[in-house]
Image 1 (cartoon, rainbow over the protein chains, first blue to last red):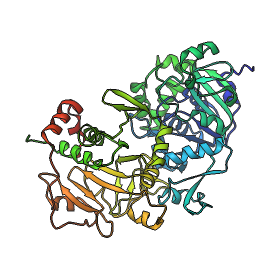
Image 2: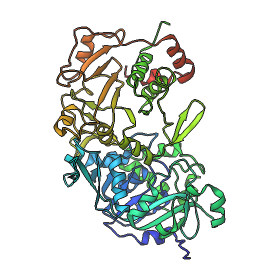
Image 3: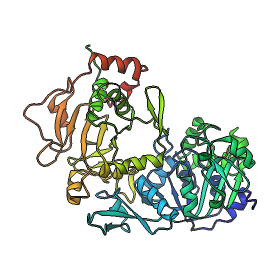
Image 4: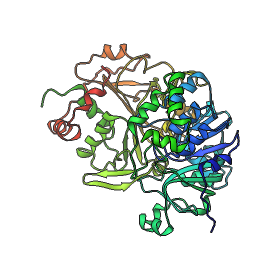
Length: 280
Length: 243
């Protein structure tokens, strides 16, 4: 079996400006932040980011890497509004595809199943259809004749997710309470990369949790990156909770361009090892 | 028991939203609706299913089920849920906005985003909690329709609108519903100590006013003890209200 272990730099080297990038996790929970930080430091531009949005979206937007965000919300959970996303929206600096959370789920499902769309009730009657004029409805061909939203597949060029454990072949294990949509992100993407808290042998994966905790199979994965503390400052339970104090510092960095510059210089301009030393 | 606080009246009014719902997921967004759902389950609606806000369903003795986000969307689509959401803006038809203020293309204030509001309102009963009843919230037209109201549901028609229901709107002043001939918002009860004029003045559109207007009921002795001793002993509920 192939050894898929890569470095952060090798993963970022696979990206091109203009790509559509899916990011797993939810809000400020189990986000692949080490990879996000590396993309923020890169020279990539015009990315489309598909995410149940948290600081992954905010950080990439603040760093100028994003043209469009596809989401139902962008939140830091304990801080309801993501301040960098908020600022960019109010400046008109980014494009937005605003979807109901369930529509985003259905769009990932459609892409993962290689279907052009999936019908969904969510969105009918709402302004989601007004602000996304490309969305179409479809009528049931059966006797009910019901009209539903035809949620198009959210097909991704690349997906990034962060797991608690993984082996070198790309089998990934979550140990927290919620898988979020990480397997769907991987299947919806042409190429998928998983970062993990700790690389382990397959034997350790088997004893680390029940079989159903092995959410990600190696057949969904192109590369594995070990990034200890790599979801920081989002939560990665049971390995660690969200770093609320640091999240507040991050949120304050949206107050002005000067505040952002200071935050960036202190935490982001070096590599991941530099970041981890700066926050430890 | 005397001396119920306004927050306690609001918690009971939120609890009443779920009366008669049976064995469904009662989702409260925000502290007062969450306390209301818990109070309902512990008293007159014991069959309600509650989530811990993460991925577990929680009964009297701890976890009784698993409900990660992917399963929440399944329950929404299955209709086994009644949610009480917040609202940054609401109009007389029950259209709700939580996404942004101003133009959508470049908002003056970016808020939460549409979140699950479109899917909730088209799939299962929805209620709203407004901690500060004011003309900023109760507006003639909302800037972006996230949760759909009765006029939008009427345009959709049958069968698309068959699961749509806005049950009640609970505020710090009153309880409102849509039980009027034209499905416009109706004042259902005012909280003790609140006048009808006060509610009308804080609402940016004409309300249906029934001839006989009751007061919102106050907590029973048992409800008040549950709230004070078990559900919110730290008294966080009083900080949730707008004034």
